[in-house]
Image (cartoon, rainbow, N blue to C red):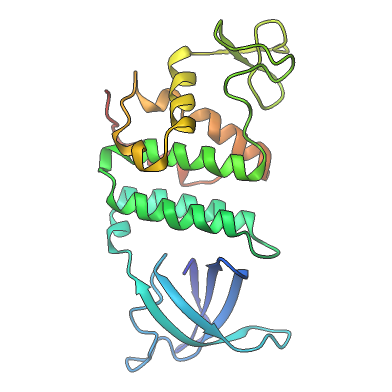
Length: 238
């Protein structure tokens, strides 16, 4: 369950993200009533099996909702912010139909955010963003120049266009990317998601956090307003 808004004194409109049908909206009639079968089930990012009525040109009727997994751990403030950011990205990616790979990344990412140490949440968020960018086809090559294909061992630069470039092909005004930040991104890209919480890092993860944000903004033409809060708390050093 992604969003819920009051429809009347007793009912709610709910927005759900699904693997097989993409984003769906439905009317949960009587959801506010104390005897409602939906009571306690329409909480943020709970995993459930939903049954909707036929689409008749308006809101579908939510007929039944079987709760599969209640994500209580995501109610902690920083986990809530990280999960909301990931769900927002997934919502942007499935406006017109199913996106199974995006949904699977969302489900796996939420499970990881539930159980990872609090100090590892920023690292996990960056890893998930890199995976999301890859699914969108918007992740730049982290090892080679976007212009000539030369390796970035001698340094990487940012230019006017999204991507990483060697010193020769970074268009002005260019900005050097620190080796530590690039190394963090490369290690997150290469490591399985289950290893992210325990990944040893050569420096503060915030050295790498701005690049995925820039690439996501270019790919989606939107900027999330919760992401910065995920990185506001102190993070660990290796």
